[in-house]
Length: 175
Image 1: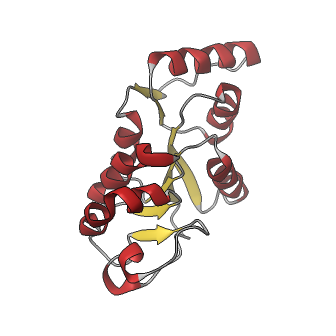
Image 2: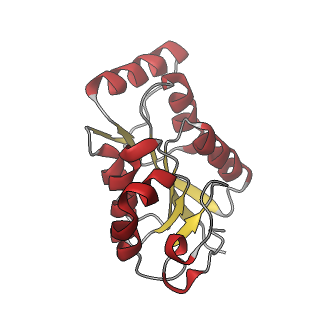
């Protein structure tokens, strides 16, 4: 079985941490391509970078990037060579757009909409744990879905309905 590439948006939040744990237990099935985080838990992100070895890390601003680098230095973790760091307000959307097989969007609030649309435009399967993307961008999001298995709800607050799941109204597993 070929490994599926995964981008985790909101990597240090509850959903992101749980996804990282699942991926670590199944290295034969998944590899992390990118991590995006707000930077509020820099030590957790450093730990994930060391364990998951992503190619890309996305952070929203220079302060968050500096905090993560400081946490790495304090923990004695060398910044991985070849790790691309994307910094700025569109960093999470850039990470979502790289074309991973699966993008898990666990970003809280309206900030998750642009990465949701970027993941769908890239053709990735979007595992959506960000209900705000559907609340504020419903028609945009459902209009961006290209195939019936592209949008998968992964949060108990997102009900699998025809409008939430895309064409055909069927939710599918990302595994």
